[in-house]
Image 1 (cartoon, helix red, strand yellow):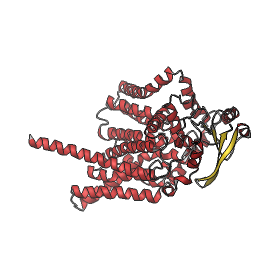
Image 2: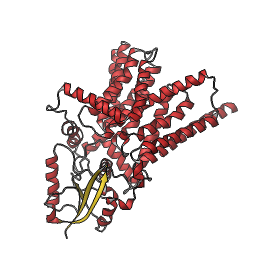
Image 3: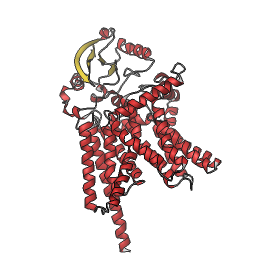
Length: 512
């Protein structure tokens, strides 16, 4: 009995130590890679500040899409709203959010690696997988919607690989796994639905696995259980917008704008042949730009898909996940560097391949497995190597040298804080970050200038705000309408360099 108790305690301690190690890895890697961390003076990325402003507005009683407009999903704003509760004027809460999500990334990565290699090997390789991901250009500045989606995709990948590797075709996927992955898909759908192509392929392959076993009703039941999980993820927002009579605003702001106004999926888009050519060319540039993780993805996907002794559907599963994820992201025709980040979910397979080869080589050379001290040292070396990689490659590292007092936001902050309870309008660009550093809740629907096809409507509304003098301050980048001089005076002008481009920011204050 004592031996059994001691074994249980040792096992529990081992689990705790492993969790602490992965959490430490998440903290250290995000600390270096993300501009949200306290090693950087601020994260002035317009997209992340836009999410922060909408999340702030949500937690101050305003309805996204109707009262403050941005076109991402509600779970993104909700999580950013929680980050706002941690710190109203910095990205400390966003950094904490990124660390928690990265920890879930690492737990999922480790589980995937355990499908192919020993636990000791998996623990050594796990931080390197995340380091490669966050060091890439597609990680961008930190805090993207794609980064929020990543743990849900990683765990979806784990359940798919585990099923086809260890359970198919002997048994169908369990209902609880189907339901759980439906929840994962629903969350992704309500963060940024372009990554939903992954879960379309995921469920398609699972349904085919039932059909391959000649279980038609099993396939139907599996799809319904998966959709029930998705529906559960939508339920909080259906209730929220339903109570506030905002269901149409939700549909218009998130679905209609993204599908018809932010992409070229309408009837005037390119032909099928032109789209295939464009997507092929785009894939080349995505791979070339993010070679740091595609050098692992390509051999890893080939190894998992083409290995010996696999069933046909098992071979097709992974290519389907890759294809539909890429298609969902890029079929709309829009492209920005951080769009590619969800594709990094497959990086782990290249490391699984490398770990498998290493174990084979070690067995042939008759090397004995290292003791606990040796494994700990190997894990520490792995984390250190990941840090060196980020410090050497990440586009964000040079920005650590920036000083807060030199950044235009903090110069303007001193001016804005001269006014009691100030209000603000951000024009000519997405949210530059002044709402964040001054802790201002947006009061205008078009609180920033959107890059969508209804630009004329946005500009007309913003000119109306200015003509009526609705806000205490107006922040403009490079351009401002002539009407601004009727009610406002220029109180600040600062140049700012961003991604090799020079901008000029202007701060106007309402006349007394």
